[in-house]
Image (cartoon, rainbow, N blue to C red; front, top):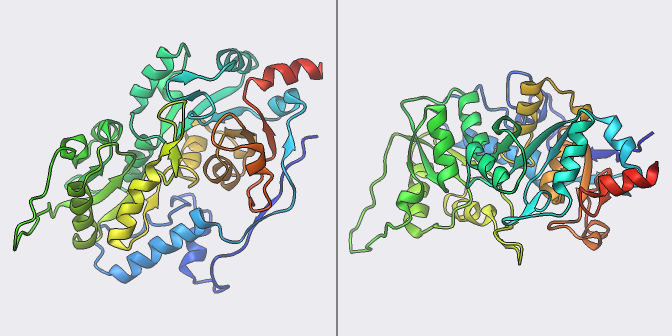
Length: 369
């Protein structure tokens, strides 16, 4: 039998049954579990209640301050046993499938083997710069046969979340990010502004200058943006702070990303951090490790979460994403996490298993026979 890492999370709220934070953390089939906000009006005028719920959301899903483990991760020794124990593998992309625009060795053969054994494969990425269709083209360019229906990017998650809460179609979305978010919002039928078009805009600070902003913006979505500038920060800040009930949505809070295979680069979390600082608000995070995409996938494909294995290279996003969703977890050391980081006494997030790269499924399978 496969051993599972048992994880416990201390309560982040008081024991009162009416505590909002207990409501936010409870499983509710009609309310996105990681937010618990579907019942809130988009015409909110009670800023104090709104801010409190946002702060509770972060404590429930991103800080995990009292996160403790009862077992350490085990090296993967019998790949067959893990493969046979689940129906679906969810793979992160950057650091697992590729680095930058370079495919990691052995990936095509590994995916082919898993498909031949009847496993469902899903690819989930926090990178919001591309839409699902654009990611499909990247997979194709790298020689991988992956359909658009198997790809879930945080750009898609942002649009899917807005649809799940019936975001008013007469409201607009201001985008701090790249083309992927715009394309997914357009497909979902939402009005938007900002994005790459605002990358070249500048503010001329003259005495008495007042920057105007669109009062119909009901949400600001912040993702990875290589063209972030002061204009975008100020415009988004005005919308969040001055438009009643305006949502502050982050596609992810990743500290670093892989733009090339030569080094790590500042990630989407650095862009989100600018708005946290200027608004003194916490964002609603729709990408990993929040459970929105996991719940969406489980519902879409009719998958039991206990029959899913999450494979990723980041402890605080990929592995926590799998653990929050009740899945098995496998850490690969081909991305941002090293063995020394995993085994550090300061690290409290332990996957069920770890291995060097996903192609170890092939060699460990052979060794186990």
